[in-house]
Image (cartoon, rainbow, N blue to C red):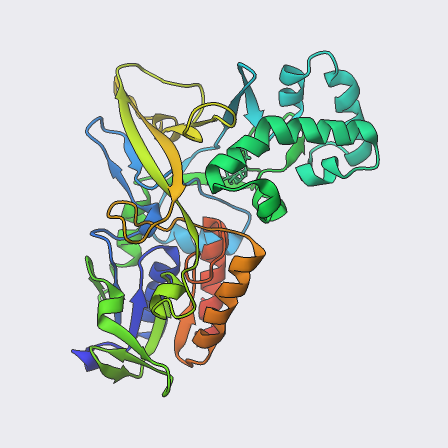
Length: 391
Ligand code: UDP
């Protein structure tokens, strides 16, 4: 059994699947992929529900990239269905575009939108993204006031709900740099040149990535039951025996090291799916509820693939604490960006660096809030760096 594999990959999300695919197809290595869940693709997993609608089981995942390399790589495994995500937020009884833009300004501050819109354009230029914190700290008092207005209407309550903490206790600038104020009328959530969804879904794309004959996927298997670490000899043990091949680990790092420095905090989510007997439930793919409701947002999947069934499927996202001992609450979705957590993480990372053949990769293992386009590129580059050679 042990000699049968040259490499072990823990986890089959983007980080794990890309590494497995590269190791097999570029280096001819025999790879064992160990996956805890009953399916591949990690949080990218999607499936067709009883209404015939493709549902992202772990929340909306919208692909976009500015990287030709990322696009070329994925092209091998999927065709594309063009889709540009749009998000509205329910604020002051109105639906306004998010990220906050000139249209949002018009709708929420109809009496002042001309003056403030002009000020934004004169100060920053047109089609420019400005973090809300830059507005809140600006020397111009009117921009500071506008920054406060946007902070309180769009970000504050959403952030408290999503992260279970106040913005000042989090690395708020990093979190909200993802959704900066956009001085523009462009109401798309993303501006990258390539925006599309895999034409048959993410799961089908991952199936093709992992279909290489040198790759074996073992589902429903907790890697920490098969792998252990000999800290003194700095060796990974597989079934209790030293494993001399490469080990790519994409799960939580605290778990790999038996929580020896304590638990890394993660934020989790509960998803509630509903079927509605109507053509469309809402006007866009996602509607955010920053200030009302216990959920943060509703996603209606029918907008994404332009499916035509009579019914529609929506998903509500309820943020919650991650508790690894609670069955059904055991998905650690988001690392929580704040200094104390980064410090704790660094202690685990330093231990991991002592193992020559251990590669730590991905949102969980690196404790970083990666978007999928970033983790795809980062995984390809990590492969090049560790194992050499471009495609
Ligand atoms: N955010 C917010 N209001 C919004 C949308 C986002 O305050 O209407 C903040 C919030 O803190 C959130 C972060 O921006 O966690 C990142 O949002 P994004 O949509 O990128 O979150 P993801 O899809 O990764 O959950």
